Length: 281
Image 1 (cartoon, rainbow, N blue to C red):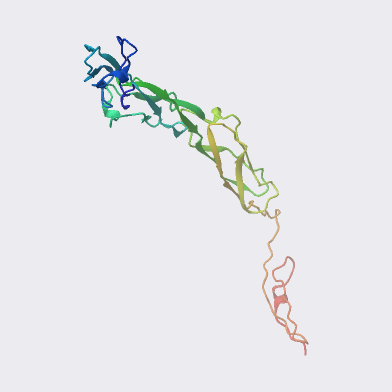
Image 2 (tube, rainbow, N blue to C red):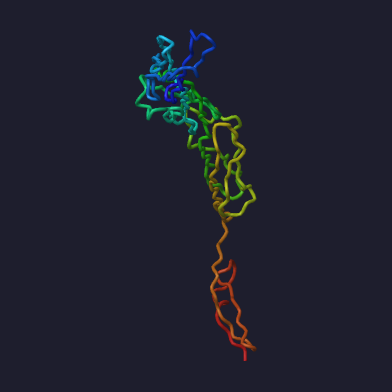
């Protein structure tokens, strides 16, 4: 029988009947039993018979043996998930098959559990496992679990800049947040490309800079736009040598129909009196 099981019925076998006698010829049949119980640890236990009577026979008894074998116990390693670059979570065992109110604390030696995934493991699925459990009452077998390494988040931000109206825009460059395991831009399977919507003909204003196209199996990539500010271009007005700047003086002249006119004074060769107000009647 297996540890934890109900003992089987013990039966008697006979040797020595004569004259066609059989068990049914006995005045009283034998009663048989075993010292093993469902709680008996693994080992060998006696089986015995007694109490048979018959005036025609001198009855003797030979004991038998009941062997209690280990019960099967399955130890399953826990499954879990982790992010690329993170420390793997602890692996724990679960059990199926304990009998007689046994539990993990009943084991002579508990199992140790681990995973072959590390913080440096690339995205993918790895094994978890347990081993080393010992108890004489159990035949221990193991079931592996899985550790799934998922992608780490990576944020790529496009650089911001300012550009003067009419000038070529500055190059847009990416910056990164989220690299792990010593990774860097050179670790990416495909680097991002960055650009701006600004051109030399773009009017003064704010424009987006952006990056896209980065690829790496270990990262989930998101993007943050920057800003390219187009500033006014400077302009310088220079008078020619010897030129006299004009000064504009607003003057009013009342004419028929109440029309008004602006007269320029201080023009080269002009008369300051020409700016006087006149009224025609």
